[in-house]
Image 1 (spheres, rainbow, N blue to C red):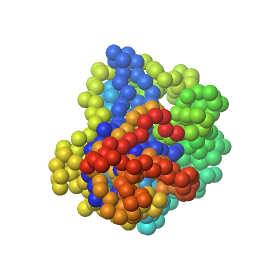
Image 2 (tube, rainbow, N blue to C red):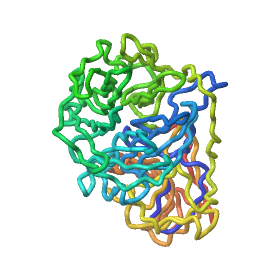
Image 3 (cartoon, helix red, strand yellow):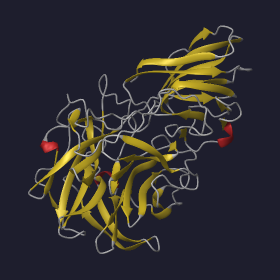
Image 4 (cartoon, one colour):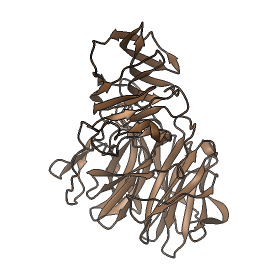
Length: 482
């Protein structure tokens, strides 16, 4: 859910939640799953709209990033010690100079970031799809995962899902998906000193025949080079496949057991669309993070694509995920010291000068429309003419829905002066699909209404109810949203 305004108002949130379709997000407070007595963990390990996970290790610490699409700040980044309990450090892309989302279409923006650490520096490489500048592939760097991160080094506009691999001899390989639905993994060398690509792009592998062979990651394990990709698209046919070679340039031979991860033949399994994974080695063995979603009431994935975890073993030089079995809701936890973080509170009092890290905006915010200091203890929002239906930047702040069942409410102080002013809560999928609880003038009185926008149209007449004469009003959603 989010809060939207077309004039000035103040809010207090009991906890927010927001609706998400497959590539978008909902607002709800972030709550990582906890492991039971450090023996069991529950999937997904990061629930809600946290797709396309990429992970890297730095000593005993692990860091993970996710896609963020049209939302700002971009690329949430998490820290972990035991692979189960995650703490959000912040976001990688926090300035408009790093991420310009002006008029970005819904589900455009940041695709499939990859996080790597090399020689004391973090590298995050990603694709911006769409936008006024036409998007492209770039990377940013930082010596601290919490930032600040550099401005982007732009590489090209050729393909999507870029990844970096740092070889033992100092060479850096830049791999990405090229040519779309029936494309391939292409690769060049990257000169980190100049920030330029070198040599001609070489085709590595087209996968096993599935559409959208994307999300390539190159690894070197026991002297062999492994290329892992996703195939089948990011919905119910999603899968992970892998190939190996004696050279980073190939030729690559496919694992005869491919796909190494999929639930596409298990329609009754509660986890679907598994894929887009990233391997990591730990003292507790090899593990893989990957995305999946949890359909509800048919094929409705309103929480979006979430972050999952599973163990990896090796057989005849090939990775085997969870012993080759489907991914269950609970698994034995990694044999690492448990390191739980303090859970975020369910209620936000807005008593700080900064919003908690889970709060995000639709595209780049108009900063003067938000204040935590004009009225201490409240979030003041200044409305604009931009609505939730517009491919623009409304006055909106929200966070992901992370639970299938939840209750959301806010305390709202708002006195509309004309019929074109409104404020309230929204359960947002994208610009064309959202449910709104709005306070506005209706028939000359301050009333609260429920508005349903589906496929860009009002799906039924707005249901209005007169508000009793109070200065402040509590409004909210309750139930299961899909």
